[in-house]
Length: 238
Image (cartoon, rainbow, N blue to C red; front, side):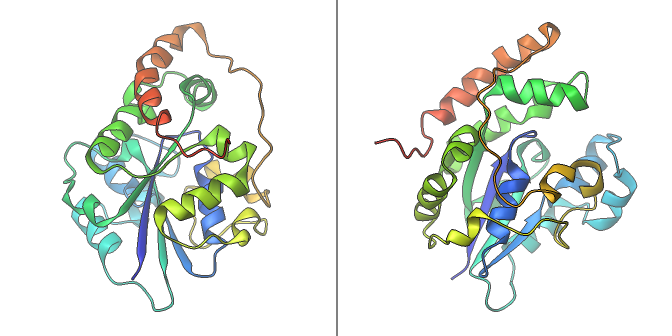
């Protein structure tokens, strides 16, 4: 039996590092943001690498869902799907999500907004994915990982996550070779410089988030959704 892990994350988390972690397992195949082309097709947004993204993935969500729930190569026990929650647009059917082991990577909205503002000046609540994340959690449940907890104690949190997903803990998840991967999305050259130079999870940085005053309302709007999932997060605290 294959465990199909749909990890739903907002932007500016440690989602790509977590994908690297699962990709370090010998029994796992990863897929990077498979709904991105559909998202760009429907919204018309001009993201870096738009043309290449649209050419690299199916644009119909139905085709993506079929691939994510369809046959996999022999020897694959875990299919790790890195999803951005804001890619789950309202037009996308939800029934296929019930065939997946849904999980959630969350981050304090102040840090998300502060980080996002550095790459896109005027994000909206929809760009951050908090509402969609709560929607999926309410419908399907599943384990919740807070990015801060993961960086504080990678081994402890990953072991808890594997147990919650019903897969074996593999210490190989703690490190990986530097460099790009064939499984990275074609947008990697625009966004993945830091993770490509990494060989493991970065140390936790306790510095407070510097949120621009004009975006403080986004933190306030996202906070209740974050708090809802945070209450269910996996923790290694005694």
